Image (cartoon, rainbow, N blue to C red; front, side, top):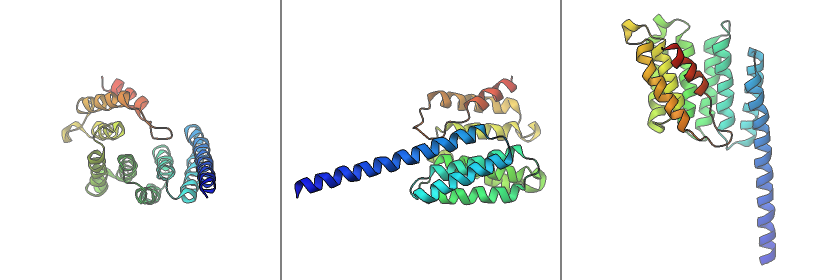
Length: 208
C-alpha cells in the first residue's frame, strides 16, 4: 500500500509538472507574439489566444492580464478603433483575472482602459472616465505601493495634463524618476509583467 501511495504521488507530480510546462510554453509563445505585434489584428489575435489559455487553465490570472494588455496596446496605436467597445472588453478580462487573484498589475490595465475612453473627449469624459482611471491607480497602489508601472502611468497622466490644471512635465518628472527607481529594484518572477522601464526612461528625457 505504501508503495502504491508513493507511486501515485510521483505520478501526480509528473502530471502537474507537465501541465505547468505546457502552460509556460504556451505563455512564452504568445508573449513573443505580443512583443512583435504591429497591427490591431495582431494585438486582437494575441489577446484571443491569451484568453483561451486562461479559459483552459481556470486558475491563472496572467493570461487574462496579458489579453487585456494586448488590447490596451491596440487602443493606444489605432486611432480608428472603437475605444469604448475595446475598453469594455478589457474590463471584462480584468473581471476574469480578478476572480482568480486581485492585484496591482490588473489595475494598471483598468487605468489604461479608462484613460483611453476618457481621451475620446477629455472635456466631457473627465468626470467619468478620468475619475475611473485615477481610482484604478489609487486602488492598485493600496495593493502594491512599490509597483513601478503604476507610478509610470500616474506620471503619464500628469505629463498629459495642462500646467494650468496642475500637470506638465515639471510635475511629472519626479514621478517618472520614482518609477525608474522602482523599475531598477524590481525582480519579476518568470512570466510576470516587466514592461515600462524603457518608456519611463524616454519620458524622463522628454521632461528635461
